[in-house]
Image 1: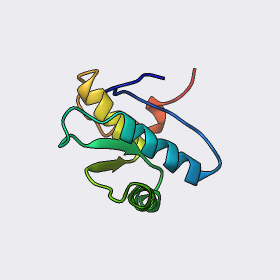
Image 2 (image 1 turned 120 degrees about the vertical axis):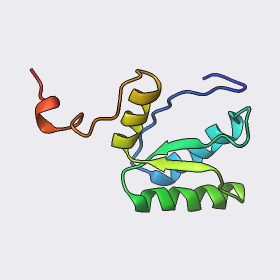
Image 3 (image 1 turned 90 degrees about the horizontal axis):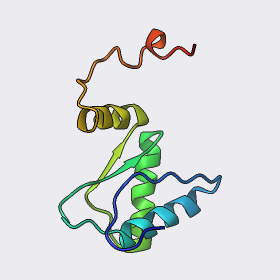
Length: 101
C-alpha cells in the first residue's frame, strides 16, 4: 500500500459493510488530498448506501464533509470524460453497445 499523499482507484470487497466503511474512512484519513476543498468520490449502489456511508464516516471521524457519492454509471461516464476525453453519450451503456462477442 502506498503511504503519504496518494490518490487513485481503490476497490475493496466484503460482506460486512461496517468493515468496508472503517477501511474507507482509514484510507481517506491517511491519504488526505493536498487540496482540502477537493471532493472525494465514493461509488455506491443506492442512495441509501451513500447516506449510510456518510453517517458511518461521521460516526467514526466526527464529521463527514465534501464527499461525492456517485453511481457506477456516472463514475464511468466521468472517467470517460476526464481521462479518455470522450463525450457523454446516453447510448454508451445501451444493451447493443455492451454485448459480448
